[in-house]
Image (tube, helix red, strand yellow):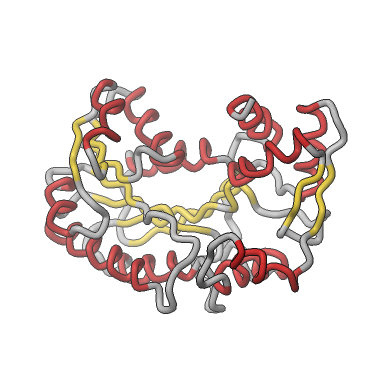
Length: 286
């Protein structure tokens, strides 16, 4: 049995679909039965568990050949990442109790960075879960290409897309969630000993300007990126409802300044180009 958390999201969904297509048994971990209905129709077992509930998670993980885990995103964490600490502690307790044969954990580029920033949540997770007694692989993925979903409507309507990634011609390590899910599914079926770190980006690094070029082709109009001045970020994020914008700001600084980067020399390359992701997202928002 392969147990998948986050299966209602993009990466977890790709993991689930890949395993089901291979004829493998899948147990989908969801917070409520309604969210799992579509997966039950595809043949999954359904387990109900919140990611902070160690008891429910241990039941969901019971008897697993392998478990795929990820943290729910929190773009506005309180100081000290208390939500992350609670969820990681619950995950650790549940995995110790359930004793799956191996674990694959979705992490991020820059998880090893010591500078304070939003991605420290994944650093916390890696540091805790690497002490598990079973084999564990941390899949460190680049910036998700699908993050541009928020920009598609603006590109189509106005031709101007604000960018926090700067300079606009600087290539960024990005990856499609389809590649992340595919590689995670491959790792779940492999065997290894101890701790693995697998770093993954797309077939080529992509600059904001290159994304704008792809959007121009898709929408048959000129699309340009417009850098949002750094000194405006905090006020803008607070106006959008954020209470603790500094971690997000420092994460963006890390990409722009280059200290959020992959740790090892052997970074795996995905297959999905950014042009395919732009086309797919444009279709979804049409």
